Length: 296
Image (cartoon, rainbow, N blue to C red; front, side):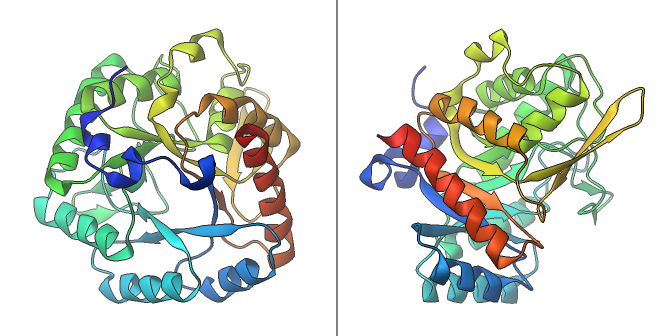
């Protein structure tokens, strides 16, 4: 597959990762846990050099604070937009998209990451009430064209992430959906390893499927990992994303499966809002082992 044109615009994407390995990073609450993140960076014996920063459009002061935090702690930033609505039905707001892109540039982020979901409805942000996109052929065209339009306005790469849908609607597998959207929009992808485990569990499917060989793994430039909880309701298991919990062994096994496939991965981020410093340090150590295993 040819190098996506939008990815080719970004020097961070076009250039190889320093010393041939993805960077190791973390996320904590961007507003309330920056001191915790700084402590973890200081105490960790592993090279923690990246921070996933999250903000809403309009949080100008927070973005400036995050820039100062990252610079004082020697961290590169990967910006996660909380209200960039890749899959919604509200008209795309060009001014909002440009403001989000400006935040990414202020933070020095090589791209903007957000989940494939509806994040805004009638102008109201849905931070705690993400609406899943139907995993259907019809939705591919809608989302693909919308992502391309947003990316053209932003004039920087927009990276779509597989989300932790509590309920699945539609016949497609999430990777089939992401692959088709990325091809139509010519965009990069973020692989949340725990989210993939969650969605496959909800359908009673193995983590690794033969069809995954056709997924454009070379488009994956960022990956996330966090803990999960599982509740069995009989008819179906409810598997949920839990950033404050240690990573479960099935998710670590999924990480071992996926890491060799993501040949252009540039950052592995441990999502850890609400986690203690000691647990986060232990998590980052194992994440670094996962990076080292594919960097030899």
